[in-house]
Image 1 (cartoon, chains in turn brown, red):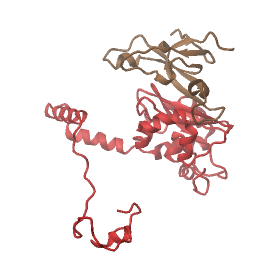
Image 2 (cartoon, chains in turn cyan, blue):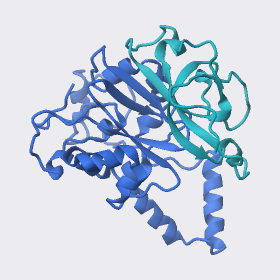
Image 3 (cartoon, chains in turn cyan, brown):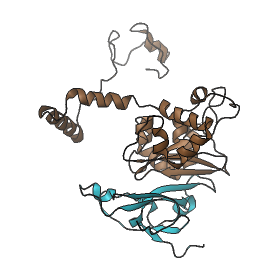
Image 4 (tube, chains in turn purple, cyan):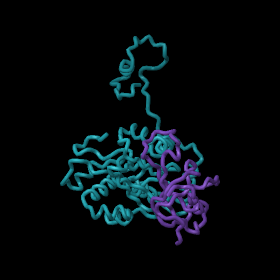
Length: 100
Length: 237
């Protein structure tokens, strides 16, 4: 399967407002992160949830975000703390503005 | 009643335990009446009635038997953090196993007879640089086939919302302090992986057997809300 992203790539979670059973948490939408791992291709759970077979398969990426990117200082975390989440490929866009 | 578990020997004593009043009794009650804890709640929600209806229909139509349902419940109740502790302790004592465990969790735990069907078991190693802490903000994803059912707090909206935003405050409430410079990596379990934390091996345990080490591996240390116990069995801050 042709994967769109590779480890280390800078990505943005799509800031979409899809209804129903979606797996990209709202608090991460529009946030910038980096691909940490590739967990392989899976049937799309957002289709499985509605009794469909889940095709085409979608790659599940482990994406890492800096705490400040998400909470902008309004939280209780350290300077090096991060959040990771599993985000499916169709929720990710390349972050063209990121410093390489 | 007091929250501190003072048990009344007879009907009257519990009043004296709670407050030093003079028994002038401006509150109506009978002294000989015993109070009981409420029983398990009767079904009242729609989903509870749906579950009962579905279960009864499946049994009535001969698709499953009542015994099979009970067997399944018993099987799930039998899964417990001690399984995870055995896996962790083996990883601490066998470097080759640890390597396989971190590379392919499903395959490595399969060697020990554990299965995580349909999901990818990802074991995350805590190191002096990184402390992992697992949460499922969307629901309650948890490595159930290994650790059994998650604790109630893991499923609470409070833990799920606060773990990602104020992990250090949450850890403090668990009695866990992670040095400020060390990265806390909050792992939101949002999809097909199930994460198990491999805690750091406690100091002073050189030469210990896997069986002995497993005693130091707590459930919370495999979720990342705590670290493993110290060599003397004391809780580590």
